[in-house]
Length: 576
Image (tube, rainbow, N blue to C red; front, side, top):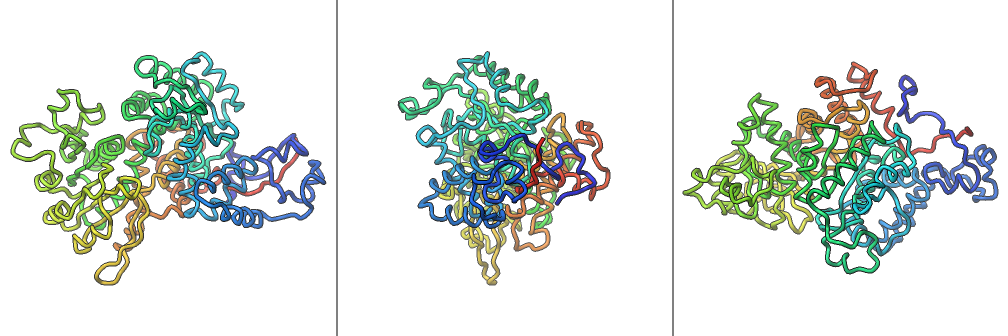
């Protein structure tokens, strides 16, 4: 909703839009095109008579027509292609249509269907979107960013990927540009980031995907991935060029491979406001569900014992967020908090001998336990680990289906009143357990959230229990919005904990223990306001908010935030 009080702000979304374009040039500009919704006055002023049918439609009427066309497409990929085409014609209608059918269309414009589109990128390519940076031509990085056409103050968020670990489908090379595009669509849908103030980037460093290396139609560099010093220098040159060209931009790293994701994030976090959704976003939304669960179970964060089954990028990212929250809540050091988290990966429980053998990633090192403590326990058996640790929380990111067996779950339930169990692996066929089994094996006492949508589970009392989905899209957009609006200098662990608490505060389970541990994605824009407000307040506390004039009152802050969130509505056009 528009606020006259804050309509003067540079990022205000109120009032008219000024343009010099007329006629067919205006109709061919997706950001300004209204199609059949141009009112009579604008048709006359901008020379559109005779270029569009005479009937004037409302946006609602346009969306209904577009939805009918969408429904006629025979499969998910065809629907995805239709939506991409719509976006290239009329940006407002594209976002307005998705908002009207958010839950239905989310899997089409994002995971899982976007993964299929990425796999077919070079085969169905029509037109480029974003910036393509070539490791064989690093000297052109600065010029390529210049050619993107935006002025230095006109980019708020950059999403970049090197395409190595896309949506669980692995190395997709230059097709990674589409995950950068898709993430920015989510930022706009869920947090109102203006679509014209974003920049998708792919770092083309080659590919190790055999099929792409042997595909004549592949559009990226057909060479094995560059690694080591040359790779690091290329990434750094991009970061420095982006910061120089767009000094206010918040940088989001997406789908970098396991050897690089954490390393790159750790390198640049002390220097600038940046974020990695695979590492931090998954951790934040999972932590929010834990906060809601411990409220229901009447536990304290600092007292939890946690087992993370799966210690890749997502697993260690979740562990890190839990560690940071324990430290913030209790005042204990991060090193002390680590003692309450046990990480299990392919070799079993992470042990210090594995560090010495150089078989663990740097992100896994802090979680390695002393070998002596586990000499009498089978550290490769999840059942034995659960029996020894007696965890309050069991989290799965292993992609090992059905690994949370009845024996494991019931062993856990012996030692805690309300076992908190999150099978998060995607897609659904890789989940560690089905929620209905978890309820059955624990006599309905389990508190659960999953990585994919599941239907409610009916208990013995006939009541239906909602199953929360750990959907990152309820989290990272609001974090980014907060960082953008306060022009945060950095993104700190305390800011992420504040964001997580703000998300957890919206959980339906706080009012009804049978409801979900996380809010529904349909409420995501209002959730993003709350998260952004929490991030901004924490940034102010830490002296990291560079924007002036941030309101002091909480109600005024939320009004200030909403005024700067883009909505898919047609604004009046005026000639420059």
